[in-house]
Length: 114
Ligand SMILES: [Zn+2]
Image (cartoon, rainbow, N blue to C red; front, top):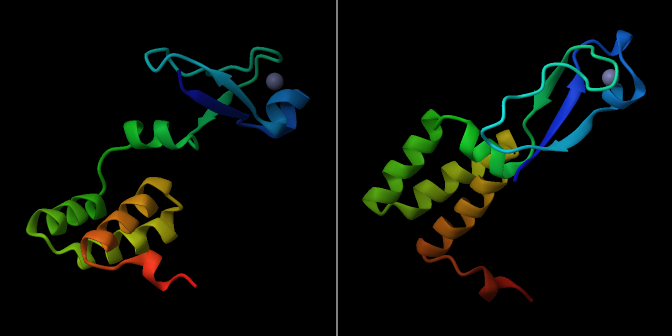
């Protein structure tokens, strides 16, 4: 089951627990918590767990473009785009994808290591 992180919407009126943010394990089908279980003040869900982000976010324009390049076998194009987007969005899945695409493009990272 995925871990979700929550944080107080208004840190001014919340308990220590939700002001700093807390994590809780929930089923993916369970609705998001809207109130802190301790102080009952509103909280919002933070999406930082990679597995949750991938499943929860719709495919972006960039994702589509990368996929298109991959379909056409333009691995270096796909890799560069994924690399740039990974830098920008800090998405781990894109970083991994960029590496894979670089490999398919013929770059061999092991070779350059000294
Ligand atoms: Zn609280």
